[in-house]
Length: 589
Image (cartoon, rainbow, N blue to C red; front, side, top):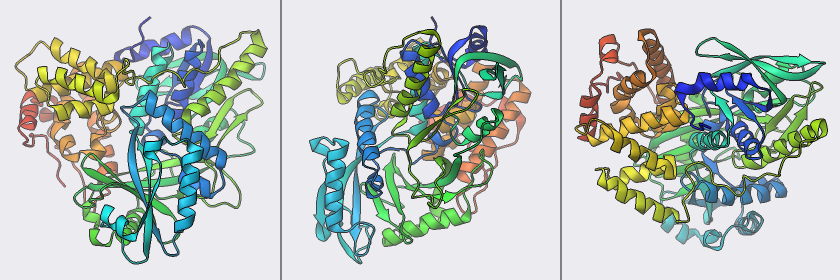
């Protein structure tokens, strides 16, 4: 059985879903839906997953990008949640070491702050104990002088000391894609840009869904014994289609993050600090940048486009300048940003930051299973709970017995190290990369995206027919080819934003390679003139959303159609290799 996740085979996957009745149809290609498809397919169920946009295009690609234990949940008395996400954090680090990386976090303690020194000491001890933190990552407490030696940027007034502990940084969109690939490897049928338009009923029970291919307009009737609604912020909209939106509903809150160059906010490690008003936010260094966030405000606008307002931007800049007075961060320092929505289960009388992040399961009269709430860190346990429930119902219906969950014992795609440590696997790949002319730093960067699947890119580079192309371009070509053939990448936005993260964390590179990306993707996916124009419009909109947050910034892509259609990808890549902007740094700011 072919288990690739190819963009070129996407129509075939939809046809396969509609050809035979499935055990489970999952609605939603965020981390929760991906986790459910992975778990169910590991147990031998026939599984289909449809996502109306791209994988991780909603909440799962717009989080704080941390697999964390949730220190603040301890303050709220959610002991069980802290214990659960702590154990999941360690498990995900083992399953996907290329995507889940431990980083030190400094918690400054101020007079009249959220956490006192003694309370922080006790709290971090309990946090370590509940989360099962390994000895090398257990908390340390520092007094004022030592804290300033570690992080001299902190505001000195009122500083009493700090707590030093570990969190785990991730790439949320890439983690989602790798879990989707893991589900596909176990036989799940998967398609992005496929939207459920309405449900099909038999005897008052939900029996299937009419799914529209958002790219072709074709509609498929997909039948399944169990249908699971894991649509994140859209779960209530899906429940409306089932006429079952009653009882508990979602409260959507918006979280905004901003990215600046690390030189503008040169924190030595991640920090979690108080802001005026009682909230706490993060400042996290990553790949030569520092990103800050997050806000937590009730959101009532369009779910598809939660934008960043002037108020959001000012709130985060003021918070940073309060915590790090010498930084003097300005709106013009912002390079990019993103806004995401948290699908919380509404609790009357509680503010956004007080509402529990626990997940809840809803079962409608028609049998539609809905999973709502939850956290990125706990996605695997959420999936286990949902699939356990579906398995019990399937057993009651026809006597089929499915095995228990195994996702706690198998690596996620790209995370199988074949008995090596991550450092050993990395060194091995660096040597192979050097034989192809690829720099060690570039290999390390590839591994943070693809893990041991980086080998697949090397195979494509070796097999390339044109050996005269610049190494940088050959590598870009291999990465695009892999993402199309193995990660169902359908657009330049998919590639630049969610498959690589360059749009958020490497704006100069994004500007340099846009022409090459568009040219190569157009070649592989056989875009006609109309599709090329559509792709440029999509790209312009997303660049404005990501980069328009910078003060006075307005991006306009070069408009010459002939340049778009005939972009000299080799020249662009050669210039990139030499460190010069290509002709397609045609962004007028």
